[in-house]
Structures are given as structure tokens and as C-alpha cells.
Length: 372
Ligand SMILES: C[S@@+](CC[C@H](N)C(=O)[O-])C[C@H]1O[C@@H](n2cnc3c(N)ncnc32)[C@H](O)[C@@H]1O
Image (cartoon, rainbow, N blue to C red; front, side):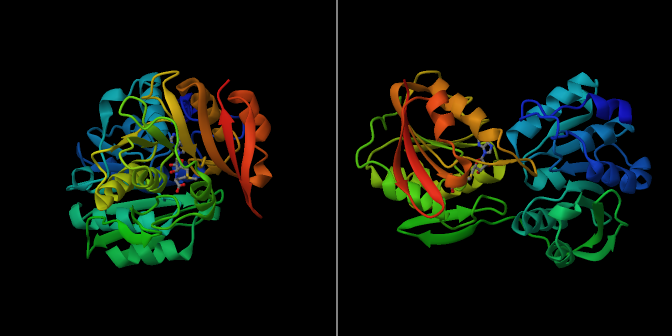
């Protein structure tokens, strides 16, 4: 097993010596599930929220086939594909959206616990609704990312919950006897005149983050762009709250909202539908602005991420600013909000061009950077 693990990389996600593609929680989930997997038939095994393919490829390497796998982040899904071809296991799995087809009839689920309890509630409900009654769920994570409320959420949907011994600061929750399943439905809220929808795990849930609020309060009255060929871009859109705000505040404007997370994209779709603006807003799952041509955009709004899988890292925003620089046309603008402690201004100046402070409060700074 360690030979395939040694070959796994996080690419195209950020890579650094302290960011790993396989960790102790992945190894513990595989070890705890090994006996059950030994008698699995093709199609029995489902993997949810694998980070970069360790669980899917670990199971495939041990002989599993017909694995259905779902990774929320498109970078994780692409890393899995790249890793699979590196270790010659591409034919053993297929990527499936987080819906009934993913878990239908599953008898073994390997789950990397998501960061939030709300995301776990959606996943647990879906498994309980559609998996085989004999399903066993091996849900593991690092102790620092686990809480007892995760046990409680699993108990809502499973009659039996066993907890593994901790090993290398990781633990596995083993759930059996599914009950009371339900398909995920988004949380709904009315926020400052907008309808917001959020599936479990979307940034800020069905609320307006205080940094996002500062950005919205300071966006220009009449931005350049907003045509079908040059839409206003809502990069890293989460629930789509910035895109929905722009499409309603700038009547007739076309907006392109994108995020790498499938939960975010599903939430943003639901948000646009709830506001009746789906005809002017495209929502796309994408790594940064991968689907946008170079030198094509006049206006991008961004509240940048700081997580890569479970790790908090300062490597993501610079990577994103680089792609913004590629996609902005000369004179195009990035409107960005950031935690003032992160001191992004020199980075923005270097990657994009002259950067002015537009607003600042106790915690956040809003800047506009003009592409040189
Ligand atoms: C701070 S949240 C902002 C969400 C939303 N714009 C708001 O203000 O409420 C950052 C978002 O970046 C997304 N993200 C992280 N890495 C990304 C990438 N490589 N490409 C696109 N989106 C990414 C996350 O999924 C998350 O939804």
C-alpha cells in the first residue's frame, strides 16, 4: 500500500512540504474497513470526500472495482484522476455527484468527515435514504477536526455507532443500521433583500459573511462589463450571494459565478433560482477561472478562500490572484475583500497591478486592483 501512497500528489491543488496527499486518518479508515472490504462485490464500495484519492485508490489497490466516488472540490477530483493514472488504477472507479446514484445500494461507505456538521448531516441523510440496509459507514478524520456533535448527527441516521481507538491523532466512527434518511435540502434565508440557499458545507451557510458584507457595501454603482460576452465575475462564489447581489443591483447585468466546490455550486444554482435571475447568471464548477479566456473580463469580485482540503494555507490566494491577472483585460478590475491581517496588498500589486484601499473596518479591508 505504501508504494501507491508514496506516488500520490495533491496537484493541481496547492503543494508544499507540510501539505500531504495522504494522512493518518486515510490510513485508519482503510485499516478499519479492510475486513469488510475483503468480501465486497463490484459496486459495493462508495467513497465520499476523499481528499486526493488515497481512499479510492487504496481500496482499488486492495482489489475493489466499480467504486463510486465523490469529491466536493474539483481540484481533489482532478488530483484523484491524475493519481489514478500514475498508479495505473483508473478503471476501478467513477466520479459521481452527491446524489442518490452515488450511494444507491452501497454496502460499504468510506467517508472522510467533512469540515462542518451541516455537511455531514446532508451526507448521512443521503446514505441512510439510499444505501443497502446492511451498509457500514467508516467515517474518519483528524481528531482536531472532529467534534462530538458529529457523533450525534450520525446517530440521527444510524441505529448503531461504534468508535475506533484513536491512532496518530485520528479516529473512525463506524455507523450501521441506517434509518430516517432524506435527500439534502438547502437551508433558506432572506438576507438584505436577497434569497440565499445553502447546502451543508457552503461557506457561511444561508447567511451574509461580515467580510462579504463589507465588499457588497463598497462595490461601484456602475461597473464596467456585465454583457453576455463580458459578464461580471463572482469568483469563488460559495452560495452565490455576491453574484445574486450584482445581478439584482445592476439590472440586466450578466454574471458568471464559479466555485470549485460542488456543494457551493448546487447552493448557488438554488440561490439564483430563488431570486428568479437564473437566466442572467451562469454557475459553473471550476478551479479558479479555468473556463474563462485570458484577457477577457472587465470586472471580478472575490472573497478569497484560505482552505485547501482541511488545511489552512496562505498559498491559495496568490494562486487565485495569478489566475485573476490572466483573465482580466488590461484596465479590468478585481474588487477583493480580505482579512486585514493577511496583508494581501503587495501580493495584489505584484500579481495584478495598482491597488487602492476602498474600505476598511476592524477586521477586513476592501481593495480594487486594476490590471496593468
Ligand atoms: C471565503 S469563501 C467566499 C464565498 C462567497 N463568495 C461569499 O463571499 O460568501 C471562498 C470560496 O472559495 C472557494 N474555493 C476554494 N478554492 C477554490 C478554487 N481553487 N477555485 C474556485 N473556488 C475555490 C471555496 O469553495 C469557497 O466557497
